[in-house]
Length: 251
Image (tube, rainbow, N blue to C red; front, side, top):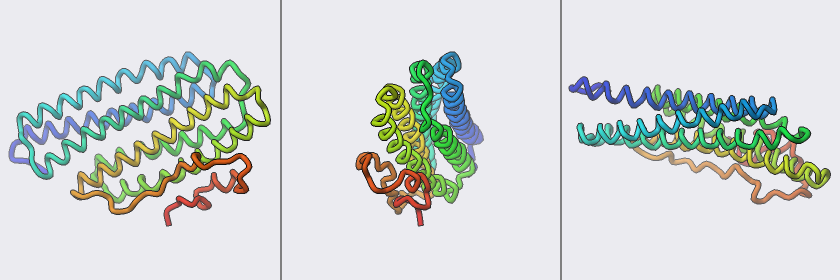
């Protein structure tokens, strides 16, 4: 939508550019955090932690830009909804960066112990989460609600992998008590990735509201089932890991 005041369109475009930059940086942060984890490289992890400062600065820039736009333009209706939605998305992208930073912070401890087999699931989880972040940013730029809903539904895959890894690590810790410290850190890392997926779904909901002027009517089932996990559960981890076998998989 173009406005009679050209400067207003320029301000909206600048706001979108800030969010696009934030999204790219958040995705990059996650990728590099997982690379540092896989390589067991504390120095690479330290660079990820330093990267997060740039994301924090961009969020502040977005906040300031929105405040100035509201003060200058007094937006209403669709414009106000778009601007407020952008503010929410900026906050969610900053949280994604925080989760990536949290992953990087645990690399040093993990690098000091022998690797554990269940950790092989983590890069796959991270790849799914990265894809969600990238596609939800595309949905934002394109104002594509169909793509936003697709991202919203795809969180099931991340949740299924998290549920599987949670159960595997619990079993591994019982069988190998010496792995408890490293496995606990891996559980926290997996939870941070799962939360990144949640933030991407939240962004998808905001996009849908911004474009359609109403909330998504569907209710997304709770995908994180670890609150109910039991090591002796009869359901096999492999079934949980496959989204097609997940109770939360979209029909």
